[in-house]
Every structure is written in structure tokens, then in C-alpha cells.
Amino acid sequence: MTAPFLFDQSISLFFAGVLGFFFGLFLERGGLGNPHKLTGVFYLTDFTVPKVMFSAIVVAGAGLYFMADMKLLDMERIWFVPTFFWPQIAGGALFGIGFVLSGYCPGTAVAGLASGRLDALVTMAGFGAGSFVFAVLYPYLENFYNSSAMPGATLPKILNLNPWFIIVFLIFFAVAMFYVMEKYEKKD
Image (cartoon, rainbow, N blue to C red; front, side, top):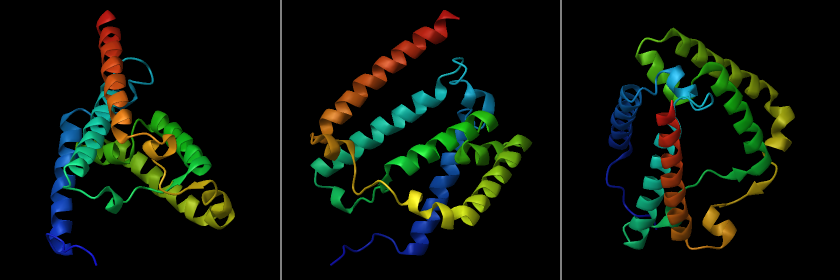
């Protein structure tokens, strides 16, 4: 038996659209629609992206497990992207190469396009072309694509640790990383 949903699907899609709009707005207003700010981390000139990403990871992780501990959320009902170790390593490498070359990831390309950057449009065309090439080649890549499956893999499960050990470690790691990045940025 499944729990009733708070909203029907059309209202949920409406809220998803509203949240997506504000997510894009905040990305753009935070400067993350600018490829120079996005690639600054690769050139050790701007550390906004890792600060934003680690903040989001720590807040989301702590929030999810806090709600689970308070019995407001059943973590068994949360869907995690399935892990396929080697294909995701290869995909991450391709993503990283594309990020360095274009200065955008998919979300920031949309934010860049919305703020009038034509290079973001070229990047989005590249996403489309890459997706098309992948679809054409998929029959040849399918075995690799589905290899090294690790169903339900999370760090707490893999390491057999309480999730709060991982979250506290990430908090300390993020604070130390932010401190080092701030010192490095101020030395210039």
C-alpha cells in the first residue's frame, strides 16, 4: 500500500517548474551562468562552484537524515541514482572535459542562455549532439553501460557506518576546504 500524495501529478509538476525557475534564477544571480566563474576553480582563481556544491551536499545530506531520524521521511522510499562504477567514471570524465572546454554544465548553460550568453547556446547544442551520438552508439555501448552495478550504493552502506559519521566528516572537510580556499583567494 502506498502513501497518499499531498498533490496530484499536475500540481506537483507545476511546483517543480516554479522551483526550477527559482533554481535557475539563483544560479544566474550567483554568477553561475558565467563560464569564467564556473571554470575559475580549474585555474585556481575562483572557488565559488566547490563552495556552492559542498554547501548543497552537506545541507541536503544533513537535512535528509535529520528528517529520517525525526520519522518525517522514510529513507527506504528515497530513490537514489543506481551506481554503475566504471561507466559513471567514464561519464564523469567526459562531463569534466566538456565542462572545462565549454565552461558550462547543463543547468548553468540554461542559466547562461537565459542571461543572453550565446556561448551557452553553443554548449546546449553540444549537449544535444552528444546525446544523439550516444543514442546512436548505445547498442554498442550497452554492455559497458550496464557493467559494474552496485545497487543501492551509498557511502554509509559501503563503509557500514552510521550516516552521521559521513555527514560530520563532510562538514569538517567542507569547513577545512572553505578555510583553505578563502586563504588562497585572499593571498592574491
